[in-house]
Length: 414
Image 1 (cartoon, rainbow, N blue to C red):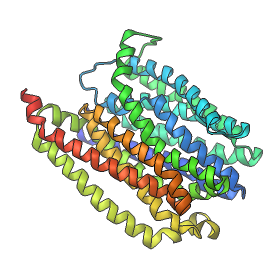
Image 2 (image 1 turned 90 degrees about the horizontal axis):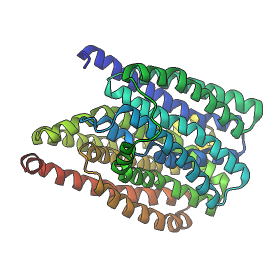
Image 3 (image 1 turned 180 degrees about the vertical axis):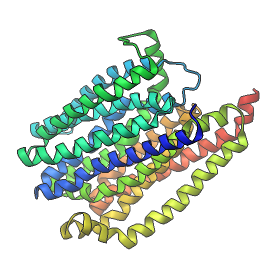
């Protein structure tokens, strides 16, 4: 373990890098408005981002939270990396099948799968970052984020200006990120963790079994947004989906900040729980609840006061005229972040099975409501459907966390 000063410095690198990388990804959804006036292209970009987000979950297999809280070293670093090669291939195939099923044309199909290749590099980066996090090398994670984010936004602008083609742009971005992965992240991980190449082992089966519930949970959780956007595409068309995606893009900062700030503390929840420190565990939960309440008040006030002005600055008067979409979209990302916080807490203490029950119900509610509310309330109906399902899921997960907190003494004494 590093000293306090270096630890803070490394965590700062990670925080800055994560925010910068996500900012660069979000910036693509802003820049595209200036690069093209075709809202169909903008809608395709938004759809590609949303769909691949769900299937990146399959590739990541919900392992990051499990991996960084694997304090007993049930599985080796080499096994975590080997598992990612298998899940990446499976995710790509399933993504292709899904995109065909929902009825996209061949141009959209190729574009979305090209973006999926880029997301698979991110997924492989994710398992490498898990190893680096265990060794407290957050500085390497942050620098990688900055390097990849800069490359992505530069190549996105350059390639789209030269080709006016999203597919070619995504493929160039994929190759550049793959080079960074091989020459920077994996090279450093191999030195730090002494990783060996594993094609297959019986331990991988155990690892997949342990995380199978997690991948189901994360896939369905990330698919909440996909379901409502597919509903918009089917009922209202690609152009309106483009407008919805454009207004939605600034709201991702809420979920990003929650994940960046909270992720380093997941191992602390596991430590408090496993050591039977009920008081400390309770303090962590109280801090989460207070942050959620204060955060909700803050984002509502900020959106009401500065939302329309912000859309005008970021985009144009045409997008700003759809300001009424912003607040419900902020609620979507805020409650998604709150759900992520409670889910991460449960994963860190290995209370994983209840997650699937909750997300299954939330997903079903969202699926049933999406078409109904989109046809009734238009674009805002998609947000209402997602918010209702996320709020119900948030309260369910909070109840499970409280039950587990009250069982700490029994678990550690029994």
